[in-house]
Each structure stands twice: as structure tokens, then as C-alpha cells.
Image (tube, rainbow, N blue to C red):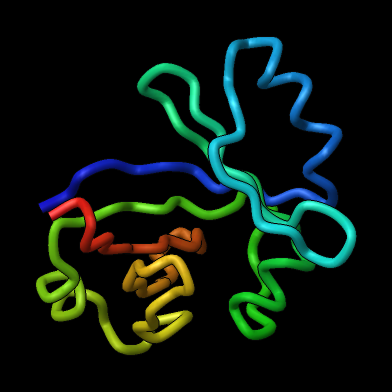
Length: 125
């Protein structure tokens, strides 16, 4: 059912974070601008991936949702059908949506107050 989990680290600016990861061998494999700066980046180092997204980009992307400082855990799943039935309606932060990059996502608050994004990427089927 679950394929992998990737943290989304939430920051004010992405650009100052990149040299740290590049020095460790990570490469930016996807970027999304937000205004005149980066709003989102996927970094890959061997089999390990992580993402950064700015507060401003998240507010725009998730329609004003306030995200805790710790960020988001993004979990790729084989099918959202089971996840959809398991998440209590009151916990849903962002209802199911399809992104511009083709993923179907649902965001929910877990009981500890952390935001969890469940996603299905059809190209991985």
C-alpha cells in the first residue's frame, strides 16, 4: 500500500539551503518557481529524496492553510481509495485534488498536529 515517505521541509527561502545538500551530493531534480524565487524543489541523493517548499508557496498552493514549522510528511501510496476511507472527515486539511504534475493528493492532520500529504502518482503504477 505505501511506497515511500518524503519530508517537505518548510522554509522562508529555499536558495540558502541548496549549497548544504549539494555539498552532500544531492541534486535538484525538479523546481517550481514562486514569484522571482524558488517556491518548491525536489532534491535527490542516491536513493534518498527530500523536498523544500516556502511558506508563501504553501499558502498559495494549499489555499491559505497554515503549515507547522516542522513541515509536511509526503507519503506516496499505491491507491488513495483505502486512505480516503481511513481518514476521519474532520482531519482532512485539503480535500482530494489533482495537481498540475498529475498526482492525486489528500492532506490530513494527524493527531499530533503534523500535516501528512498522501499522494498517488499514476505513472508509477
